[in-house]
Length: 81
Image 1 (cartoon, rainbow, N blue to C red):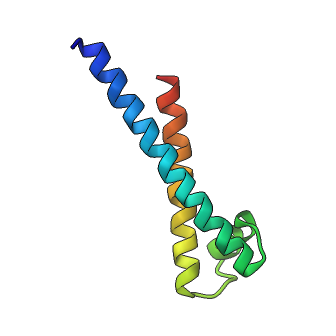
Image 2: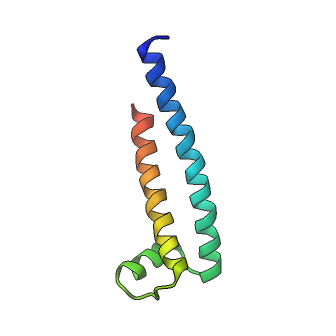
């Protein structure tokens, strides 16, 4: 197997993993948006400004948001490679 093929397969595997993770993040985020009846963008602004409580759900939500954002950026870079 050539080096280029190995690199291409590794990139494709990482893209596949990223898509899977994004799907999971998105589903969990949708549930939290529904539960609290606010969008993630509204939640993030409130959370970062300290205008929302410190419930465990909020820390999980913020982590999901950051993870989703990370993988969106990473996938964009991988697809451009």
